[in-house]
Length: 393
Ligand SMILES: *Cc1c(COP(=O)(O)O)cnc(C)c1O
Image 1 (cartoon, rainbow, N blue to C red):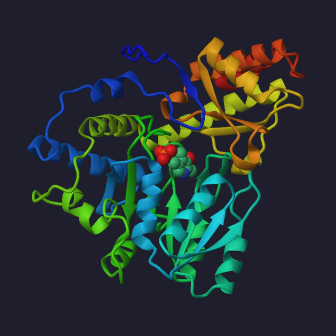
Image 2: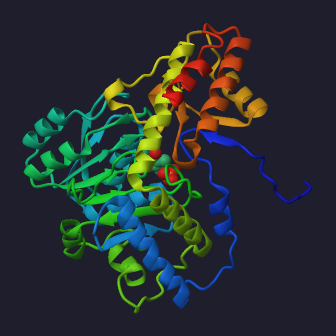
Image 3: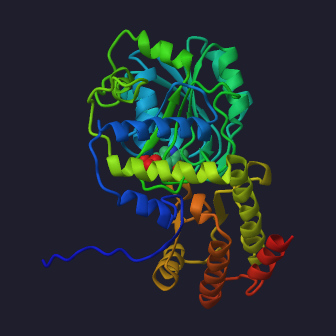
């Protein structure tokens, strides 16, 4: 084997994450490493917390980035809020709800599953029924934006129902945060986790989390210590908590924090509402192009995520061949179907910095060309004019 420096190709990332990382964030990542307890780094941590509170629309003091990917954010919420014997209602409408079940069970809890079809949002009535049937449940968990299907659920309503039945809520906002409204305080979400590599367009590997007072109370009054030392919020708080007296817990990924800070600054500069609008507008343009081509969305119009567009693969078209040609000939990555939807859908992401007009036109042109070349039944040449009409409106 010979070893050479690794120079990745330049891709356009239009899958389910990671999204394109803007040069500005990559530049921030390369700044000199300093100590994780350096007073200047502590200042940066304070800024990161405050910017995260803005992006999550919360005043929760317990808001911070977990030093690990979105999956660790998920695990962090479950290990801190679920104790052995606890009953948790998990609403599942895609891949990630299944992971929530795994988490509950590994915490020693009992997961009661509320199932909805893949591509549909979580049905509030089914949650209500499950809570009536299980009055001893203490936690309700659901995915706000199911990246595996492109469906968005009504987080505000689901949280309201859970609270009427005296349950805490755990919300997965990995794909929704910064792409579509997420209002932690207004919606009274108790515990929420996200990721950096989707609509924040930061490097992968960090998971913002936030816990409100009710959740913090539960964490502070547990009967057992969480089985994870690393993710135990009572310990992590010693490092990420308020005030100057921060103590070593683990070495923060210092440079990744520079990158996160830069990513959050970019959202702040654009304005959160403007970021939501941009995602919505660009989705409309991509949608017009895909539909003009003859492709069909698998999620109802009212529940579509602007940042994750799942379309059915036309009959007889070779899924892998199309994705391979997009990647190799056009350097564009789109996502394959997951789980039940493997081989049936493509998932086209317009997340964060990937949600740009040039990405939409490049992707539509490339997809149109590849599909026409493979003899797929598409309206060749119709996509770009349709998208451009929306963009010009
Ligand atoms: C991507 C994703 C995760 C996992 O995040 P990683 O950073 O890949 O660990 C969890 N939930 C949802 C809804 C996601 O889209």
